[in-house]
Image (cartoon, rainbow, N blue to C red; front, side, top):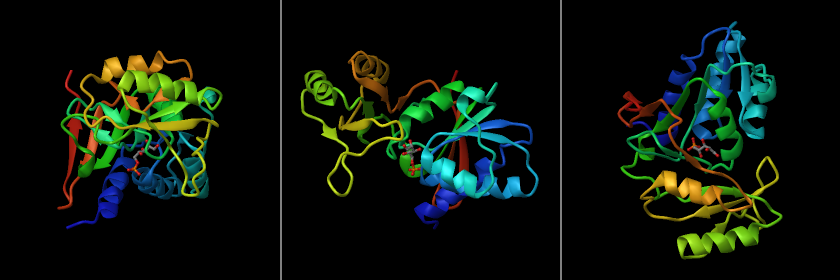
Length: 230
Ligand SMILES: O=C[C@H](O)[C@H](O)[C@H](O)COP(=O)(O)O
């Protein structure tokens, strides 16, 4: 049986095979994507010619270590393919993302891509989103006001993401994250809209109708492609 890290390596390495010379790709963030970036780096060092738009400082740094040419999203005329991990994946390929705090840039890159592929181990598959706390990126300027609005919307106070030293976690874009525990999200679209309606909410970790395919790895070493219906 494979360890969780080995499953991530399996799907990350397999996903790197999707990348063809000439492409501009989006590269996501997280422990699964680290394996994809490493595998892609080997291909680049063997002659694969690509350009990449990264979704975080951490992925920038890893990609740079492997000489993967990076460009800014504004300089990408086209992104043929974006690949990223996820924290939860439901049967419609609706996602919760942002466990690593990169949701805002990840969503901008995924939205700009012609195709968005998710890679994950099977523990990320759920029947309904919501067991994983939903990350919401908020302005520092009014985060306490946002929190009050969230308490009205959800009925209980929410958790500002903190670092191990107890100070607030800050995103690459200089914002805070509030992690919202739902248990089950009955209507992801309505929730996403309601959250966006709160001034000071910058982005949510709900990625709805974005992923076309997901590559899932299992402990027995098998992988499976799941496609979004419709
Ligand atoms: O902010 C982080 C991203 O959304 C990650 O893609 C997500 O948290 C999954 O990360 P991992 O592959 O480490 O489980």
